[in-house]
Length: 233
Image (cartoon, rainbow, N blue to C red; front, side, top):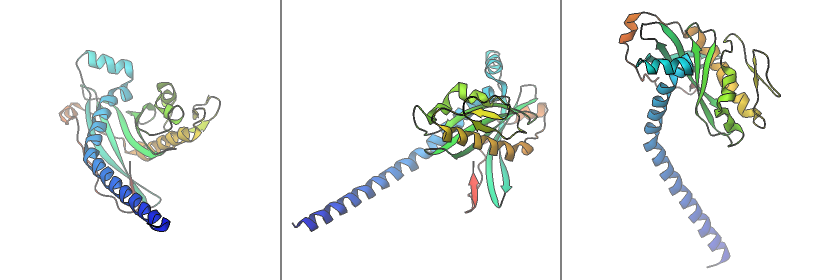
């Protein structure tokens, strides 16, 4: 076999292997996709009490064998010709008082998509917590967005203020201290939070009352398929 024919055969072999590998990977992702999403919903439900109440009050509620009533809904936001969908979880105390909300939002990070859970108080005035539901940022750098100390900066920030990322220690109410060596990841998370809060805060009004205790704990209401110019968070 000539060198030319040998190179051609190798090229076809590489192409064939790449095609087979891609097909197999797509099949695995299609099979695992629903399982992964179900696990995310389960993790979300577990994090909601801490995100709206804080760790101490959430622990007290659990110690008293009480649970929050949680209902999910989809909020549609139209802006600049683009429609976005956010999943919002509303939470009620056992006596029927609305205690807060959690918004599921996502956006592009340095390496891949970042998914967040943003806690907001019942009045829609303050951020009550932040949890990173999914990320693939660089280990040791951007992945530090997972750390409690960094995420804790967002707690008690006003929803009326646009947060900005600064280097060297954010001291103002509208500032977030960047992770050293991971400014892009820091800005990505902050941008996702800013967009979610700005888009959803005016849609957080929900009725309060004992009747809400009858609401099922989880309602997985998913939006329909998006058109070309639609995004979903």
